[in-house]
Image (cartoon, rainbow, N blue to C red; front, side, top):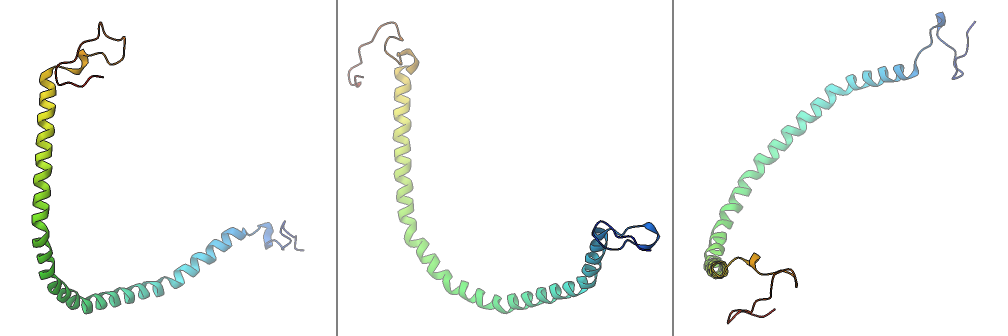
Length: 133
């Protein structure tokens, strides 16, 4: 006589119950093994088609690059003087800033001056040409 399992299905003969998850896993693995060669062939075919398409397009791409090269070279030749001038201006400005920092450093360290009112000994009078705070 068959006994029903918790799911309402008859149990296996011999008192051993079948695990539905194990059975499903085994069926999935078998299905994967069945389609694996087909998937591999499809990928190989796709790979060869992509290689053929790249081989077909390469001469066109190379021709377009050769066609565009003179225009790119002309663009660079046109823009190079502007870039050089901008670089010269930036270098001049950096040199001015460096000189300003050096002149400030020669005047003395900023830590000698109080940062907040009442933090130092006494207030000092600014040197001629220095802004008053």
